[in-house]
Figure 1 (tube, one colour):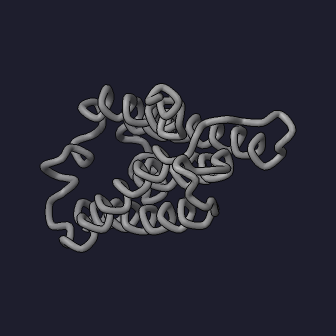
Figure 2: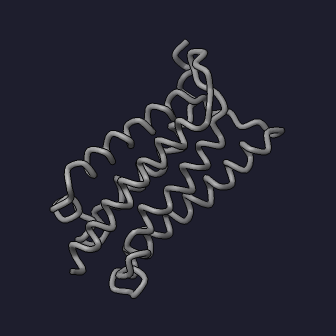
Amino acid sequence: MIKKYFWNCFILILPILIWNILLTDHLPKAYQPEVFSKDIPSFLMYGEQISRIMIFLLAFLMPLYISKSNKGQRLGLYIYIVGVLLYFASWIMLIGLTNSAWSNSMVGFSAPAITPALWLAGIGLIGNSYYFHLPFRRWPFMFISAIFLFFHISHTIGVYYNIHS
């Protein structure tokens, strides 16, 4: 019975979490927790964490099934893949080219916070139902993702300005 709930959209978030766990220590000092969390307003930190948890919860509630005939889901899968690859590339740039103009620009520094917009949109398009006969609408996942992105990008830009001013 519980096995049917295992295959859900949270599986699409796992590569991101694993990547983050394995590579965070290799990011430049500005991304390490003691610097990245310093002098950031509490409302940004709490908003980011609460919206992140809500994304995880909604992803857990969406079965992962991609229909070959559903163009929206297929588009979502492509957007997700491109988003994940760009997310990974943004980290590789920061790790491998720490002192480059890109890594020290606001856009390059913020790229790991901006690129989740793509893979989150992809997940939002892939999901097409909830477990437990809950009525499905895409907007709650997309709305919570937008809130998360607002807080996450604001947090990252705040760190950038703390370091570069």
